[in-house]
Length: 273
Image 1: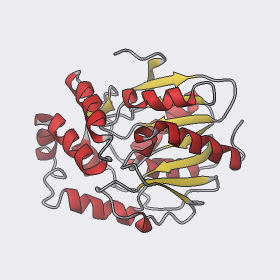
Image 2 (image 1 turned 90 degrees about the horizontal axis):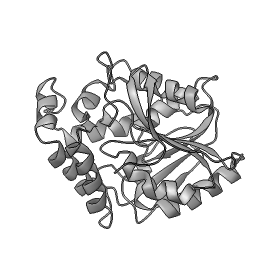
Image 3 (image 1 turned 120 degrees about the vertical axis):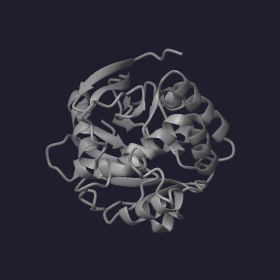
Image 4 (image 1 turned 90 degrees about the vertical axis):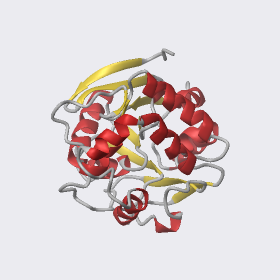
């Protein structure tokens, strides 16, 4: 189903799929989709923020409708370059970057000229926690084996996606999230999990500090794929906000509650205008 405000933006990582909802008032937000989440998952959040914030959301290369460029390497630096291109087109923003994209947000925030006004990081792990997660979900290193991992994900993307939501989303949200992801995959959407797992940490600057901007971690306590939130060790995150009834994607599982909290946090941080 077509959504208003969806378009393609040329970037260094390929043409990325972007959804915009302009607003002359309120905070300026940039959301990054964490595959197999896609832009269609953001319907509730966009509705909750309509007329209250200027919103842009995009699918990073290899996610949903964003086909990765031939030379896109799926490394942290590649995603950072891509996000920098998106941010340049969108203008200065508060980044709402979940999971692995939180490392991308941190890399941009540590630079002084990236237009990053603040960081909101749903389910953001530390580097140590990310390593533990990789070993837990891919203990035999099947997905991290070049070619074999790609073939496996390509052969059964919907099964991989449904398995992901079964272990990460709250009981109330997992079926609806999986249905939307399956529809996107059936339409030819991307979920390049193996390429991400194999390459993201290559030559990465494994720092957990977040630069000199207001920052907060939003943590869904029902997420069974990650360790407990006490393992979150970002050195400079101002605080951790717990969403007790949500799993891995609190911004999508409770869009109304997340929107209310997000707008309040932006106001408290002086980022409302």
